[in-house]
Amino acid sequence: MRILLAPDLHCHQTNYGRMLPSGEHSRLVEWRETAYAMFEVAKAKGVTHAVFPGDFFVTARPSPRQVLEVGNLFRMFENADIEVIGFPGNHDLPGIGQTGPCDLVAAMGHVMLRWAVNKPVVVGINGVVFAVLPSVKPAALNAEATDPTEAAQQLSSALLDIAQSLRAQCPENCPKILCGHWTIGGSITSTNQVLGGTEPQLPLGELLGMGFDAYLFGHIHKPQVLHEKPFVGYAGALQRCDFGEENDPRGCWIIDLETGSHEWVDLPAREFRTCLVYEEELPHLIEKPQDIAAFTGVKDAIVRVKYKATEEQAKQVDGGAIIKALQDADAHHVAGIFPEIIKSERTREAGITEGTSPIQALETWLKGQDMGAHLKGLVLSTAEELLEEVR
Image 1: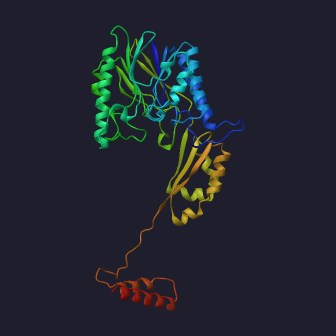
Image 2: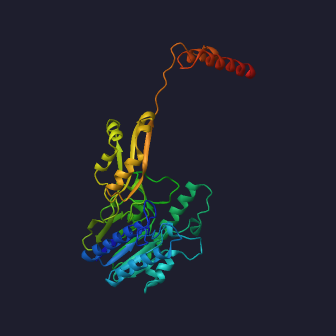
Image 3: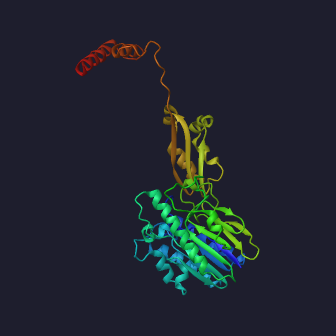
């Protein structure tokens, strides 16, 4: 038996894109191409079950088109005899007790519960048992603490108790998989950060002690393996959401339950590219802005330009010419040009000390300024009047 761990679908990102002549958004087309590539991988690799671990959508109010896209994808898997199990993530949750978009996706399937399992439950599908921990609103698990850290700890404890209860319901004569949409202790984000104490976390050691044959999770967008055998890991997200995920691979995991091995397969998601212009390269960019297109990987990518410059150099950078050069090089979208201004340090006047009076300090400063004697006199007299008024 071979299990596909799909990434968070997030159908679909609407940032950094454009409307195409067909009337579709470019990032929806990108999403569909990547999702269908994943389907072809599943068929080629002999996948028997596909796990979609939450966050089908970007928000809990997706468009009808987005709901149809996810439902159609699941139907493709089922029609190819690949069993689908999915469940909501935190982005999919409406208010407590309300029908959410995942429920609509489930209603499109002939096996309704499996496409969007909306509560902790054990589901058996063709010889594999899945213990499901979908994302829920904290209030649904009675995490009533007013302090965010305490609330996270209460929720983590409740989730562990639920997972243990689900494990007790699993038969022993078949593979058992725990899947959910939560943070596992030790996982890191796309920016290589460990999530803080306000995020509910499931300790890896306690999960391993439950004795499942694999642990397939969503929620963290950086693909990673936290334990080899049994497999514990995340597949990330189907698309890159922003530049914070620029260096993350995009793909899916295939877990072989018989051998305990796992394989990563890359998927053709849109690339993000940051063109970093270093200080020594800036004069060339000012003189020949069209050369920005020589950066590797600009074609078909979502691109931004970052550079360091003095205030005077920044005035000489032709942003319009840079954007045109990137567009001519077939960049999919130019996200912007972002200068980091190097502030010039002011030198301290040698004759000014802590004992210098304000008027004396002003006179010293005025000596170095390019203004006439009349204007300098006006500045001094005005300063004396202000100081007298303060006194």
